[in-house]
Length: 239
Image (cartoon, rainbow, N blue to C red; front, top):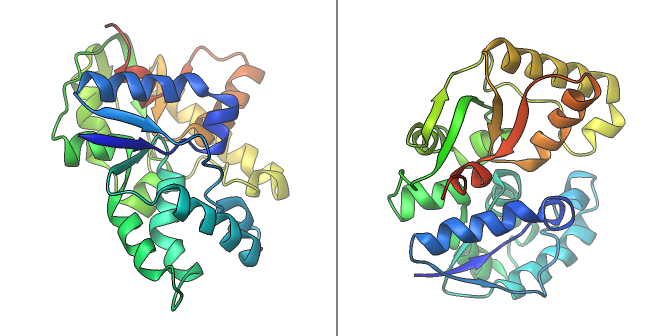
């Protein structure tokens, strides 16, 4: 099976190891993985800030870069959800309308691709400890991803999965929300981290590094004994 990688901006710039681990898992499962180095942003930051014309320009390039019949897989529910749910608004009644429809059908968040397309839950990973899972807004609300990541984590040898309180509540990042409403964002992050710590978890895991980056900042500042991990990094552990 041929797979095209969609690597979001912050993964490319700040957490490239997660991208490599996603490739490691996909190749183990028999996928032929390809990466188009011409790809750039999907346009979400500009769209969310109200710059729709600029977002449309970036999104138009994205459509051309991913004009393929292959599956497209991304380690981000946020970016995947944006393309699926908002490209239709940007390109309604335009020449790109059919290309957008095809793109939306082919694009999958990483865990969603594993469970819904490859129908795999046991990757053969090992990670000793206790974990709790944060439902990122993009994955849960934009893509409807809930049970898949938990099924994958339940098959990781040595890992005990515990649910924390309010696992579906936003962590407070929200892109520019964390800049414009810093005190609220910090308070939401504090609540999320406290719930994770109270669960007794060693690891706080999610599908989205944007959430984890925000939460890890709070964890590091307060020197708390819990580690954030993207689920791709977990699934690439121990083999």
